[in-house]
Image 1 (spheres, rainbow, N blue to C red):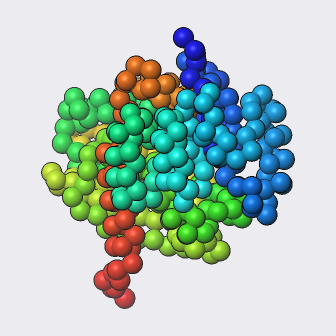
Image 2 (cartoon, rainbow, N blue to C red):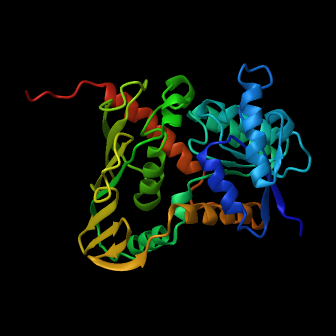
Length: 332
């Protein structure tokens, strides 16, 4: 059987992760890449030279632009790793050219766009696979099994916390621009927290939020955001994403408290304070994601976190930014 041939639009750090992951996939291969700049952009030549060097190192084809990549009949699927604001346009083009899609988060930036690509992909028989890589970690699957088997009883409270700095390339690129990114810390990196929370706990019935531009003053939006959720059974969760600092080794992770016990997923998986499984590294989550994507196309295996999850994420993010703008009760 011929391997799935995959092209990538985008040249950032995450595209390197995808490339390395698919190198370990027996059923698929990254065969080409393009950047997001079109031929008329003033930085096109500079970016194209950089792309050629990158692709030479990967031993893959450097396409002149996205149109050339997406229309190549030898390409079976496209990884969408472009600027957030371009995701919808690129996904629609991929579907219309018969290419399956692995879409980095956010898949698209609003619910109307999601409805449009769902309808179009169903009509064309194309898979749209969210790149929610963390749910494919073995430790995450074990957490879900512990919850579903009732091992910690009724969930009372959970926290999903992540703080890390971002590179100068992020700060000088499109990320700080709200028109291009459509949101900062929580809408971007915070997607990981939200889809993991949905995967483990389900959809909330109430949310509230706070945001702050505490350290990275040059950005349009927040560098830190906190989201509080309540679920139908009364359980609560807090999610916090920050781009401000790296001093977070003892803070980052998932912690879940239940009536029978607790789960902690940090450097390893702990059940009732006992280490029961090591935590795979970041790269391993992409390896497992790549296999899940090729299995979806070749064997029709459904994703663990699908477009329904994307719909719920977009509902939550749309409302959390609204609630963050509402003036809270002041106690001073």
